[in-house]
Length: 147
Image 1 (tube, one colour):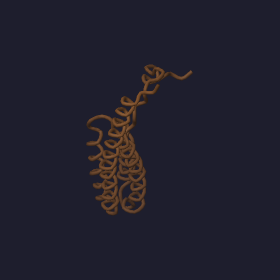
Image 2 (image 1 turned 30 degrees about the horizontal axis):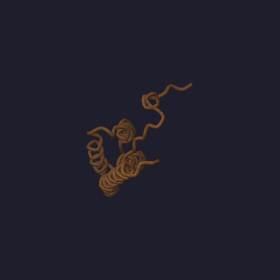
Image 3 (image 1 turned 90 degrees about the vertical axis):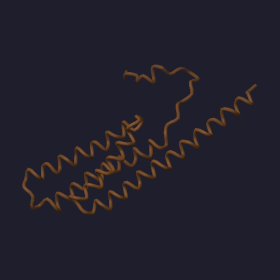
Image 4 (image 1 turned 120 degrees about the vertical axis):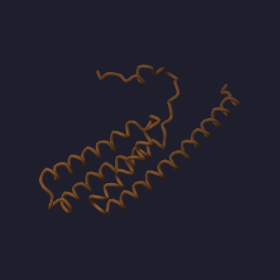
């Protein structure tokens, strides 16, 4: 049998389920898509820009791209920490900076940064609405106990 996680071990019947964050879900989606964008941009750079480069430079280009894509995915795991969203903003700047290798990435990076901004703003507002709705539900259930 598989090992149980801490949350599974601490669960008790009737325990309310903790609500997930819409902001975190949106941000994870954007970062995951950006990881693919970084990888495919590296392939484009390898084919278009790096054809005149030396072999070690081409290898470093691909290694750097794979590492950057992995960082995008790893930041998804730390979004619940206080510095997680700040790390996401830093990655947006890094994505835009890849435009120095493939100029089209300036536009693509800016569009991704816009998607990240939207995820932050809209996800945050949806989380606030969900919290307000849950509080109103809690008050209603207090005022109308089941018999």
